[in-house]
Image (tube, rainbow, N blue to C red; front, top):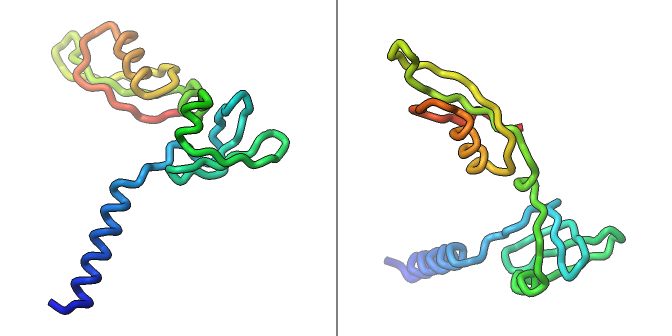
Length: 133
């Protein structure tokens, strides 16, 4: 093996190790965060620091540990109530498999599944998410 090939392999291994161990971004552009009593709209998050802008257009950059200390409360899109459309499979009175649909409102898919299962009064075989609105 040539020295240049070995160096290339080492560089790739180091790059992969850094990518695997690098923190991942927790916030998306447009998410709202509260930091020390002020609300900011996220412009970017690289996993280490978050850059946001307040209602007056002033930018603020904070690292993730500062957010924890500043008692951050995130108002992400996932926390808003959405409608979840499910199809469920069950055994009907004749003993055949049958399908029906149910719509529930929840803030996330896990909560929606729990609500759907609770509202369906019969034993079901399968619950499939069709769409979310």
